[in-house]
Length: 234
Image (tube, rainbow, N blue to C red; front, side, top):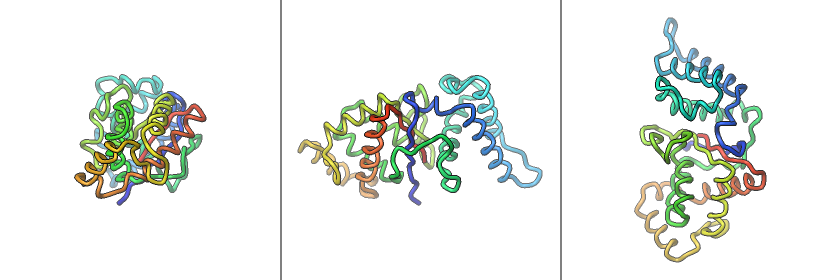
């Protein structure tokens, strides 16, 4: 199954300002309902589910900035929360969450996003490659790239870029990649190395990178015009 990646506009600072008390409360209500609907008669939520609800209550009391340095008892709930919020933000049957806006109508697949990493790795500076890995693997506030994220999950959790980071990606894509429809690396060496890595990579063979690069290009162009950040949910 191809998992679509939704690309939303965010406040300039990225994820944390997006988690307003209203959205956290709505998410808590949704998650609690989903949990209870999945239980058989007489069953109660498991420890992880209870911990996640407790963590959301903590954020409601302390504010979403507490996501940066959660108490020890909630350390394991951070990535679980990002996964579940990502599910909440991509409920197609419910439509786009209130107050949120897609940066582009394009929704590249998870496989296309992973394949695009090959092009960026051979084309753009390390600063943009690091940010691209937030897109590919997910991102928790104040953690280094891909730390504890993605490697043990069926699908990565959400990622985000601040407004400053989105402009940085836009500038690097313009400098190092050609235009649509192919978005080829501009230098011959980069083109050769990209083709070689794609040929040797199962990910590269499985999906083309162009749809993801095209979607991100649209998204960073719009975010840069509007001074917004971006959020990637699947």
